[in-house]
Amino acid sequence: MAELLPLTPAGEGAAPEPFKAGSCKLHPQTMCPAFGALRVLSRIEGAQPAMITDTGCLYGLTFVTHFYAARKSIVAPQLGTAELSSGKVQEAANAAIAEAAKEQNVSVIPVLSLCVAETAGLSEELLPTEVDGKPVVLVRVPAYAIHSHPEAKDIALAAVMRRFIDSASVQEPHSLVLLGEVFPADPLIIDGVVRKMGGRVITTLPGRHVNELKLAGQAAAVATLHPFYRETVGVLRARGVGVVSGAPIGVEGSAAWIRAVGAALDLDEDVVERVASEEEAAARGFLSTQPLKGTTIMISGYEGNEMLYARLLVEGGAHVPYVSTSIGQSMLTAGDEAWLKAHGCEAVVYRKAIEDDMAAMKHWTFDLVIGTTTLAAHAKELGIPAVYYTNMLSVRPLFLAGGMIASLSFVRELLGRRPLYERMVDFFGARRDETFA
Ligand code: SF4
Image 1 (tube, rainbow, N blue to C red):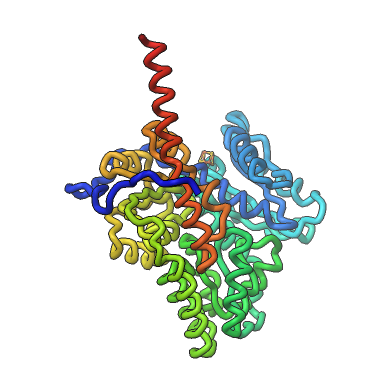
Image 2 (image 1 turned 120 degrees about the horizontal axis):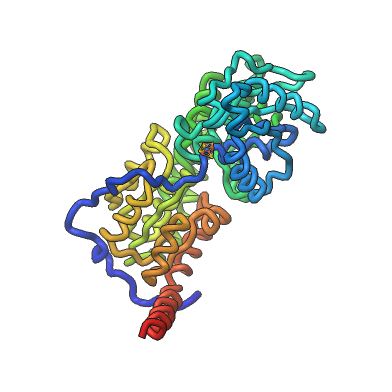
Protein backbone atom coordinates (compact mmCIF):
# COMPACT_ATOMS: atom_id res chain seq x y z
CA MET A 1 0.00 0.00 0.00
CA ALA A 2 1.25 3.51 -0.75
CA GLU A 3 2.67 5.48 2.17
CA LEU A 4 0.20 8.00 3.55
CA LEU A 5 0.90 11.70 3.81
CA PRO A 6 -0.12 13.39 7.06
CA LEU A 7 -3.87 13.84 6.85
CA THR A 8 -6.28 16.27 8.42
CA PRO A 9 -5.92 15.87 12.19
CA ALA A 10 -9.12 14.68 13.87
CA GLY A 11 -11.43 17.61 14.41
CA GLU A 12 -9.52 20.00 12.16
CA GLY A 13 -11.97 19.37 9.29
CA ALA A 14 -14.85 20.57 11.44
CA ALA A 15 -16.23 24.06 10.80
CA PRO A 16 -17.67 26.30 13.51
CA GLU A 17 -20.96 27.19 11.80
CA PRO A 18 -23.67 24.55 11.23
CA PHE A 19 -23.80 23.28 7.66
CA LYS A 20 -26.47 24.79 5.40
CA ALA A 21 -27.59 22.69 2.43
CA GLY A 22 -27.57 24.33 -1.01
CA SER A 23 -30.67 26.46 -1.57
CA CYS A 24 -31.02 25.61 -5.27
CA LYS A 25 -32.55 22.18 -5.92
CA LEU A 26 -32.86 22.53 -9.66
CA HIS A 27 -30.00 20.19 -10.50
CA PRO A 28 -30.63 16.87 -8.75
CA GLN A 29 -27.90 14.37 -9.47
CA THR A 30 -29.73 11.28 -10.52
CA MET A 31 -30.26 9.77 -13.93
CA CYS A 32 -33.75 9.30 -15.32
CA PRO A 33 -35.52 7.24 -12.63
CA ALA A 34 -36.96 4.88 -15.23
CA PHE A 35 -33.46 3.47 -15.73
CA GLY A 36 -33.70 1.75 -12.34
CA ALA A 37 -36.94 0.03 -13.36
CA LEU A 38 -35.53 -0.99 -16.74
CA ARG A 39 -32.37 -2.35 -15.14
CA VAL A 40 -34.31 -4.61 -12.77
CA LEU A 41 -36.87 -5.73 -15.37
CA SER A 42 -34.46 -6.35 -18.23
CA ARG A 43 -32.45 -8.67 -15.98
CA ILE A 44 -35.38 -10.97 -15.26
CA GLU A 45 -35.19 -13.97 -17.54
CA GLY A 46 -38.31 -14.10 -19.72
CA ALA A 47 -39.36 -10.51 -18.96
CA GLN A 48 -39.84 -8.54 -22.19
CA PRO A 49 -40.18 -4.85 -21.35
CA ALA A 50 -42.40 -2.61 -23.48
CA MET A 51 -41.53 1.02 -22.90
CA ILE A 52 -44.21 3.61 -23.56
CA THR A 53 -42.64 7.01 -23.92
CA ASP A 54 -41.46 9.42 -26.57
CA THR A 55 -38.51 8.90 -28.87
CA GLY A 56 -36.17 11.14 -26.88
CA CYS A 57 -36.55 9.17 -23.64
CA LEU A 58 -36.31 5.94 -25.58
CA TYR A 59 -32.94 6.88 -27.05
CA GLY A 60 -31.33 7.74 -23.72
CA LEU A 61 -32.88 4.90 -21.74
CA THR A 62 -32.13 2.12 -24.21
CA PHE A 63 -28.56 3.42 -24.52
CA VAL A 64 -27.89 3.36 -20.79
CA THR A 65 -29.73 0.07 -20.26
CA HIS A 66 -27.64 -1.67 -22.89
CA PHE A 67 -24.52 -0.01 -21.52
CA TYR A 68 -25.36 -1.88 -18.30
CA ALA A 69 -25.75 -5.18 -20.19
CA ALA A 70 -29.50 -5.56 -20.66
CA ARG A 71 -28.82 -8.23 -23.32
CA LYS A 72 -32.34 -8.02 -24.70
CA SER A 73 -34.29 -5.67 -26.92
CA ILE A 74 -36.74 -3.21 -25.46
CA VAL A 75 -39.94 -2.94 -27.45
CA ALA A 76 -41.36 0.56 -27.83
CA PRO A 77 -43.77 2.42 -30.09
CA GLN A 78 -42.54 5.35 -32.19
CA LEU A 79 -44.01 8.29 -30.29
CA GLY A 80 -43.01 11.68 -31.62
CA THR A 81 -44.86 14.98 -31.47
CA ALA A 82 -47.24 14.03 -34.30
CA GLU A 83 -48.28 10.72 -32.71
CA LEU A 84 -48.67 12.27 -29.28
CA SER A 85 -50.79 15.17 -30.47
CA SER A 86 -53.02 12.82 -32.46
CA GLY A 87 -53.99 11.07 -29.19
CA LYS A 88 -52.88 7.60 -30.27
CA VAL A 89 -50.86 6.72 -27.17
CA GLN A 90 -53.20 3.94 -26.06
CA GLU A 91 -53.28 2.24 -29.45
CA ALA A 92 -49.50 2.56 -29.75
CA ALA A 93 -49.03 1.01 -26.29
CA ASN A 94 -51.30 -1.92 -27.08
CA ALA A 95 -49.49 -2.51 -30.38
CA ALA A 96 -46.11 -2.51 -28.59
CA ILE A 97 -47.41 -5.02 -26.04
CA ALA A 98 -48.66 -7.30 -28.83
CA GLU A 99 -45.21 -7.04 -30.44
CA ALA A 100 -43.47 -7.85 -27.14
CA ALA A 101 -45.62 -10.98 -26.78
CA LYS A 102 -44.19 -12.30 -30.07
CA GLU A 103 -40.63 -12.42 -28.67
CA GLN A 104 -39.14 -15.82 -27.75
CA ASN A 105 -39.66 -17.35 -24.27
CA VAL A 106 -41.62 -14.46 -22.80
CA SER A 107 -42.96 -15.09 -19.29
CA VAL A 108 -44.06 -11.54 -18.43
CA ILE A 109 -44.44 -8.22 -20.27
CA PRO A 110 -43.71 -5.27 -17.97
CA VAL A 111 -45.15 -2.10 -19.52
CA LEU A 112 -43.16 0.93 -18.43
CA SER A 113 -45.26 4.06 -18.44
CA LEU A 114 -42.98 7.11 -18.32
CA CYS A 115 -43.44 10.89 -18.14
CA VAL A 116 -44.85 11.37 -21.62
CA ALA A 117 -47.25 8.41 -21.58
CA GLU A 118 -48.51 9.37 -18.13
CA THR A 119 -49.03 12.98 -19.19
CA ALA A 120 -50.73 11.88 -22.40
CA GLY A 121 -53.18 9.83 -20.33
CA LEU A 122 -52.20 6.18 -20.79
CA SER A 123 -55.03 4.30 -19.11
CA GLU A 124 -54.41 1.17 -17.06
CA GLU A 125 -57.98 0.01 -17.62
CA LEU A 126 -57.51 -0.05 -21.39
CA LEU A 127 -54.32 -2.14 -21.31
CA PRO A 128 -54.58 -5.92 -21.68
CA THR A 129 -53.77 -7.92 -18.54
CA GLU A 130 -52.56 -10.83 -20.65
CA VAL A 131 -51.60 -11.43 -24.31
CA ASP A 132 -51.40 -15.01 -25.63
CA GLY A 133 -51.27 -16.25 -22.04
CA LYS A 134 -48.38 -13.92 -21.15
CA PRO A 135 -49.04 -11.68 -18.14
CA VAL A 136 -48.87 -7.91 -18.75
CA VAL A 137 -47.84 -5.79 -15.75
CA LEU A 138 -48.05 -1.98 -15.73
CA VAL A 139 -45.04 -0.25 -14.11
CA ARG A 140 -45.62 3.48 -13.61
CA VAL A 141 -42.33 5.32 -13.16
CA PRO A 142 -42.69 8.92 -14.40
CA ALA A 143 -39.93 11.15 -13.04
CA TYR A 144 -42.41 13.62 -11.53
CA ALA A 145 -43.69 10.88 -9.20
CA ILE A 146 -40.60 8.68 -8.68
CA HIS A 147 -37.61 10.82 -7.81
CA SER A 148 -34.61 8.51 -8.04
CA HIS A 149 -33.58 5.44 -9.99
CA PRO A 150 -33.18 3.24 -6.87
CA GLU A 151 -36.80 3.97 -5.94
CA ALA A 152 -37.91 3.08 -9.48
CA LYS A 153 -36.24 -0.33 -8.98
CA ASP A 154 -38.53 -0.80 -6.00
CA ILE A 155 -41.69 0.20 -7.91
CA ALA A 156 -40.82 -2.19 -10.75
CA LEU A 157 -40.02 -5.11 -8.49
CA ALA A 158 -43.15 -4.61 -6.38
CA ALA A 159 -45.38 -4.41 -9.49
CA VAL A 160 -44.11 -7.73 -10.86
CA MET A 161 -44.16 -9.41 -7.44
CA ARG A 162 -47.78 -8.46 -6.87
CA ARG A 163 -48.64 -10.39 -10.01
CA PHE A 164 -46.55 -13.46 -9.26
CA ILE A 165 -46.63 -14.06 -5.53
CA ASP A 166 -48.99 -16.91 -4.81
CA SER A 167 -51.15 -16.02 -1.82
CA ALA A 168 -51.84 -19.72 -1.19
CA SER A 169 -48.17 -20.76 -0.93
CA VAL A 170 -46.89 -22.09 2.40
CA GLN A 171 -44.26 -20.20 4.38
CA GLU A 172 -40.92 -21.97 4.83
CA PRO A 173 -39.74 -21.72 8.46
CA HIS A 174 -36.34 -20.09 9.20
CA SER A 175 -35.97 -18.83 5.62
CA LEU A 176 -34.75 -15.37 4.70
CA VAL A 177 -35.00 -13.20 1.57
CA LEU A 178 -32.28 -10.61 0.95
CA LEU A 179 -33.49 -7.41 -0.67
CA GLY A 180 -30.95 -5.28 -2.50
CA GLU A 181 -28.79 -5.31 -5.63
CA VAL A 182 -25.55 -6.26 -3.90
CA PHE A 183 -22.08 -7.50 -4.84
CA PRO A 184 -22.52 -11.17 -5.94
CA ALA A 185 -20.35 -12.63 -3.14
CA ASP A 186 -22.29 -10.88 -0.38
CA PRO A 187 -25.44 -13.11 -0.44
CA LEU A 188 -23.21 -16.23 -0.33
CA ILE A 189 -21.31 -14.93 2.69
CA ILE A 190 -24.52 -13.87 4.44
CA ASP A 191 -26.11 -17.25 3.68
CA GLY A 192 -23.09 -18.95 5.29
CA VAL A 193 -23.64 -16.99 8.50
CA VAL A 194 -27.42 -17.55 8.53
CA ARG A 195 -26.89 -21.28 8.01
CA LYS A 196 -24.55 -21.42 11.01
CA MET A 197 -27.55 -20.26 13.05
CA GLY A 198 -29.94 -22.85 11.57
CA GLY A 199 -31.65 -20.71 8.91
CA ARG A 200 -31.03 -20.14 5.23
CA VAL A 201 -31.25 -17.48 2.53
CA ILE A 202 -33.78 -18.69 -0.04
CA THR A 203 -33.33 -15.93 -2.59
CA THR A 204 -31.94 -12.46 -3.21
CA LEU A 205 -34.11 -9.79 -4.84
CA PRO A 206 -34.36 -8.21 -7.36
CA GLY A 207 -34.10 -11.71 -8.83
CA ARG A 208 -33.13 -13.06 -12.24
CA HIS A 209 -36.26 -15.18 -12.72
CA VAL A 210 -39.94 -14.83 -11.81
CA ASN A 211 -39.60 -18.05 -9.79
CA GLU A 212 -37.31 -16.16 -7.41
CA LEU A 213 -40.03 -13.55 -6.92
CA LYS A 214 -42.54 -16.32 -6.17
CA LEU A 215 -40.10 -17.93 -3.73
CA ALA A 216 -39.77 -14.66 -1.83
CA GLY A 217 -43.44 -14.92 -0.85
CA GLN A 218 -42.64 -18.16 1.03
CA ALA A 219 -39.95 -16.66 3.26
CA ALA A 220 -40.31 -16.20 7.00
CA ALA A 221 -38.54 -12.81 6.86
CA VAL A 222 -37.06 -10.30 4.45
CA ALA A 223 -33.82 -8.40 5.17
CA THR A 224 -33.86 -4.96 3.55
CA LEU A 225 -30.14 -4.60 2.83
CA HIS A 226 -30.88 -1.44 0.85
CA PRO A 227 -33.26 1.07 2.42
CA PHE A 228 -35.42 2.09 -0.53
CA TYR A 229 -37.54 -1.00 -1.26
CA ARG A 230 -40.58 0.33 0.54
CA GLU A 231 -43.24 -0.94 -1.93
CA THR A 232 -41.61 -4.38 -2.14
CA VAL A 233 -41.47 -4.63 1.64
CA GLY A 234 -45.17 -3.70 1.68
CA VAL A 235 -45.98 -6.58 -0.71
CA LEU A 236 -44.08 -9.07 1.45
CA ARG A 237 -45.40 -7.71 4.72
CA ALA A 238 -48.96 -8.15 3.45
CA ARG A 239 -48.07 -11.86 3.01
CA GLY A 240 -47.04 -12.07 6.66
CA VAL A 241 -43.28 -12.00 5.92
CA GLY A 242 -41.34 -10.43 8.83
CA VAL A 243 -39.08 -7.44 8.12
CA VAL A 244 -35.48 -6.97 9.30
CA SER A 245 -34.32 -3.44 8.45
CA GLY A 246 -30.68 -2.35 8.32
CA ALA A 247 -27.77 -4.43 7.06
CA PRO A 248 -24.86 -6.45 8.47
CA ILE A 249 -22.51 -3.51 8.26
CA GLY A 250 -19.39 -3.01 10.38
CA VAL A 251 -19.02 -4.23 13.95
CA GLU A 252 -22.13 -2.83 15.59
CA GLY A 253 -24.36 -3.15 12.53
CA SER A 254 -23.38 -6.78 11.84
CA ALA A 255 -23.92 -8.00 15.40
CA ALA A 256 -27.26 -6.18 15.73
CA TRP A 257 -28.38 -7.47 12.33
CA ILE A 258 -27.47 -11.08 13.16
CA ARG A 259 -29.48 -10.87 16.39
CA ALA A 260 -32.46 -9.28 14.57
CA VAL A 261 -32.38 -12.03 11.92
CA GLY A 262 -32.20 -14.66 14.66
CA ALA A 263 -35.31 -13.20 16.30
CA ALA A 264 -37.22 -12.79 13.01
CA LEU A 265 -36.47 -16.39 11.94
CA ASP A 266 -37.12 -17.77 15.42
CA LEU A 267 -33.65 -19.33 15.70
CA ASP A 268 -31.93 -20.71 18.78
CA GLU A 269 -30.87 -17.70 20.89
CA ASP A 270 -27.64 -19.23 22.20
CA VAL A 271 -26.46 -20.17 18.72
CA VAL A 272 -27.36 -16.74 17.38
CA GLU A 273 -25.45 -15.07 20.22
CA ARG A 274 -22.38 -17.21 19.55
CA VAL A 275 -22.42 -16.36 15.81
CA ALA A 276 -22.95 -12.64 16.52
CA SER A 277 -20.02 -12.67 18.96
CA GLU A 278 -17.76 -14.46 16.45
CA GLU A 279 -18.52 -11.89 13.75
CA GLU A 280 -18.03 -9.05 16.20
CA ALA A 281 -14.65 -10.40 17.32
CA ALA A 282 -13.42 -10.83 13.71
CA ALA A 283 -14.43 -7.27 12.81
CA ARG A 284 -13.05 -5.73 16.01
CA GLY A 285 -9.68 -7.34 15.40
CA PHE A 286 -9.34 -5.42 12.14
CA LEU A 287 -10.84 -2.21 13.49
CA SER A 288 -8.49 -2.10 16.47
CA THR A 289 -5.90 -0.59 14.11
CA GLN A 290 -8.37 2.27 13.32
CA PRO A 291 -7.23 2.23 9.68
CA LEU A 292 -8.81 5.58 8.79
CA LYS A 293 -8.07 7.50 11.99
CA GLY A 294 -7.48 11.22 11.49
CA THR A 295 -9.20 11.44 8.11
CA THR A 296 -12.27 13.38 7.02
CA ILE A 297 -14.25 11.75 4.22
CA MET A 298 -17.29 12.80 2.21
CA ILE A 299 -19.86 10.35 0.82
CA SER A 300 -22.30 11.36 -1.89
CA GLY A 301 -24.13 9.02 -4.22
CA TYR A 302 -27.37 8.21 -6.00
CA GLU A 303 -27.45 4.46 -5.33
CA GLY A 304 -29.39 4.69 -2.06
CA ASN A 305 -26.87 2.72 0.05
CA GLU A 306 -24.56 5.64 0.92
CA MET A 307 -25.24 5.51 4.66
CA LEU A 308 -23.98 1.94 4.85
CA TYR A 309 -20.57 2.99 3.53
CA ALA A 310 -20.54 6.01 5.81
CA ARG A 311 -21.06 3.73 8.81
CA LEU A 312 -18.12 1.58 7.79
CA LEU A 313 -15.85 4.61 7.40
CA VAL A 314 -16.85 5.93 10.82
CA GLU A 315 -16.11 2.58 12.45
CA GLY A 316 -12.77 2.62 10.66
CA GLY A 317 -11.93 5.83 12.53
CA ALA A 318 -12.84 8.44 9.89
CA HIS A 319 -14.80 11.62 10.51
CA VAL A 320 -17.75 11.60 8.08
CA PRO A 321 -19.54 14.90 8.66
CA TYR A 322 -21.67 14.83 5.51
CA VAL A 323 -23.56 12.12 3.63
CA SER A 324 -25.92 12.79 0.72
CA THR A 325 -28.19 10.53 -1.29
CA SER A 326 -30.84 10.78 -3.98
CA ILE A 327 -33.38 8.63 -2.15
CA GLY A 328 -36.03 9.96 0.22
CA GLN A 329 -36.16 9.62 4.00
CA SER A 330 -38.26 6.73 5.36
CA MET A 331 -38.56 4.28 8.23
CA LEU A 332 -36.01 2.09 6.40
CA THR A 333 -33.39 4.87 6.51
CA ALA A 334 -34.10 5.88 10.13
CA GLY A 335 -31.75 3.43 11.87
CA ASP A 336 -28.66 4.31 9.82
CA GLU A 337 -29.35 8.04 9.99
CA ALA A 338 -29.70 7.92 13.79
CA TRP A 339 -26.50 5.88 14.10
CA LEU A 340 -24.53 8.28 11.91
CA LYS A 341 -25.77 11.35 13.77
CA ALA A 342 -24.81 9.72 17.06
CA HIS A 343 -21.32 9.19 15.65
CA GLY A 344 -20.36 12.68 14.51
CA CYS A 345 -22.21 13.01 11.20
CA GLU A 346 -23.61 16.53 11.07
CA ALA A 347 -25.64 16.39 7.87
CA VAL A 348 -27.53 13.58 6.14
CA VAL A 349 -29.07 15.08 3.01
CA TYR A 350 -31.87 13.20 1.19
CA ARG A 351 -32.93 14.07 -2.38
CA LYS A 352 -29.65 15.92 -2.69
CA ALA A 353 -28.68 18.29 -5.46
CA ILE A 354 -25.17 19.05 -6.67
CA GLU A 355 -25.45 22.40 -4.86
CA ASP A 356 -25.71 20.57 -1.51
CA ASP A 357 -22.52 18.64 -2.23
CA MET A 358 -20.67 21.75 -3.39
CA ALA A 359 -21.74 23.58 -0.23
CA ALA A 360 -20.35 20.69 1.82
CA MET A 361 -17.06 20.86 -0.09
CA LYS A 362 -16.74 24.48 0.99
CA HIS A 363 -17.81 23.82 4.56
CA TRP A 364 -15.44 20.99 5.48
CA THR A 365 -11.90 20.05 4.50
CA PHE A 366 -11.95 16.54 3.08
CA ASP A 367 -9.09 14.09 2.66
CA LEU A 368 -11.16 11.91 0.34
CA VAL A 369 -14.36 12.43 -1.64
CA ILE A 370 -16.39 9.41 -2.65
CA GLY A 371 -19.03 10.94 -4.85
CA THR A 372 -20.91 11.33 -8.09
CA THR A 373 -18.98 11.89 -11.32
CA THR A 374 -19.36 15.67 -11.26
CA LEU A 375 -18.38 15.98 -7.64
CA ALA A 376 -15.41 13.63 -7.94
CA ALA A 377 -14.15 15.67 -10.92
CA HIS A 378 -14.44 18.88 -8.89
CA ALA A 379 -12.54 17.35 -5.96
CA LYS A 380 -9.75 16.14 -8.27
CA GLU A 381 -9.33 19.66 -9.64
CA LEU A 382 -8.66 20.72 -6.06
CA GLY A 383 -6.07 17.96 -5.60
CA ILE A 384 -8.27 15.91 -3.27
CA PRO A 385 -8.33 12.14 -3.85
CA ALA A 386 -11.77 11.32 -5.23
CA VAL A 387 -13.53 8.36 -6.78
CA TYR A 388 -16.84 7.74 -8.47
CA TYR A 389 -19.05 6.10 -5.91
CA THR A 390 -20.89 3.58 -8.10
CA ASN A 391 -18.04 2.08 -10.08
CA MET A 392 -15.48 1.90 -7.29
CA LEU A 393 -17.45 0.87 -4.21
CA SER A 394 -20.30 -1.22 -5.56
CA VAL A 395 -17.87 -3.69 -7.15
CA ARG A 396 -16.55 -4.91 -3.80
CA PRO A 397 -18.04 -6.97 -0.97
CA LEU A 398 -19.45 -4.81 1.80
CA PHE A 399 -21.16 -6.89 4.46
CA LEU A 400 -19.98 -8.63 7.64
CA ALA A 401 -16.33 -8.71 8.71
CA GLY A 402 -15.02 -9.80 5.29
CA GLY A 403 -16.81 -7.01 3.41
CA MET A 404 -15.70 -4.44 5.95
CA ILE A 405 -12.04 -5.42 5.63
CA ALA A 406 -12.23 -5.33 1.79
CA SER A 407 -13.95 -1.94 1.67
CA LEU A 408 -11.87 -0.21 4.35
CA SER A 409 -8.59 -1.50 2.93
CA PHE A 410 -9.56 -0.05 -0.43
CA VAL A 411 -10.45 3.34 1.11
CA ARG A 412 -7.12 3.35 2.96
CA GLU A 413 -5.37 2.81 -0.34
CA LEU A 414 -7.31 5.69 -1.94
CA LEU A 415 -6.22 8.03 0.84
CA GLY A 416 -2.62 7.19 0.02
CA ARG A 417 -3.05 8.57 -3.50
CA ARG A 418 -2.99 12.21 -2.38
CA PRO A 419 0.55 12.88 -3.72
CA LEU A 420 -0.60 11.80 -7.18
CA TYR A 421 -3.49 14.26 -7.14
CA GLU A 422 -1.26 17.06 -5.89
CA ARG A 423 1.26 16.37 -8.66
CA MET A 424 -1.58 16.46 -11.18
CA VAL A 425 -2.75 19.87 -9.93
CA ASP A 426 0.84 21.20 -10.04
CA PHE A 427 1.37 19.82 -13.53
CA PHE A 428 -1.76 21.36 -15.04
CA GLY A 429 -1.27 24.58 -13.07
CA ALA A 430 2.25 24.95 -14.55
CA ARG A 431 0.99 24.21 -18.12
CA ARG A 432 -1.77 26.80 -17.68
CA ASP A 433 0.72 29.39 -16.46
CA GLU A 434 3.00 28.68 -19.45
CA THR A 435 0.07 28.95 -21.86
CA PHE A 436 -1.14 32.28 -20.51
CA ALA A 437 2.30 33.78 -19.79
S1 SF4 B 1 -38.95 12.78 -19.84
FE1 SF4 B 1 -39.13 11.51 -17.97
S2 SF4 B 1 -38.96 9.40 -18.71
FE2 SF4 B 1 -38.16 10.71 -20.33
S3 SF4 B 1 -35.95 10.78 -19.95
FE3 SF4 B 1 -36.87 12.58 -18.95
S4 SF4 B 1 -37.23 11.90 -16.84
FE4 SF4 B 1 -36.92 10.06 -18.06
